[in-house]
Length: 144
Image 1 (tube, rainbow, N blue to C red):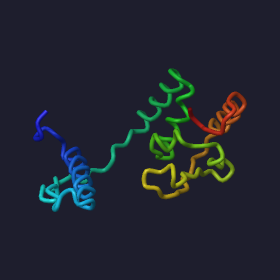
Image 2: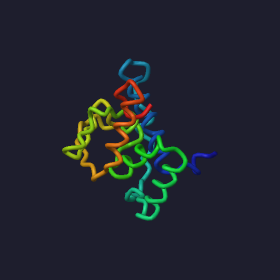
Image 3: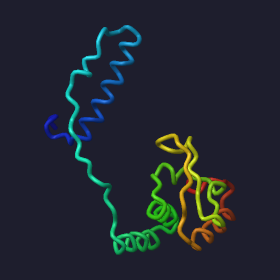
Image 4: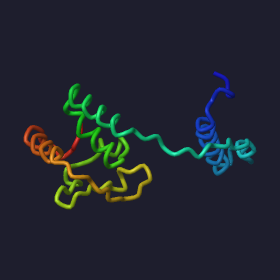
């Protein structure tokens, strides 16, 4: 694959890595200048994130329920609360407040390292999932 075939986002990600590496080397006096700083930054299109239609979201939830019922809460939280996969996988039940209908993403578990509260929609299934999960597994981790 040649550089010209790389997407602009990929080129930017590689450039950030290079700049960081050469900054580290410059700070330690391994190099005098950072040659990566002279590389033009790629122009990125400001596209909104993709969204599933309601019908596709329903199909996804149905498929998760059919294929792997353990996957359903993970998919539901990602769809309705907008959490990243890593954030959902790191959730503890102690961070979910069903009575107040929110969950807490702690800073240490967030990509941005910022704590945030996420409002949950009404989901009785999440409560049922908690009861069955807690009764069968001796851990506070939501997903293993």
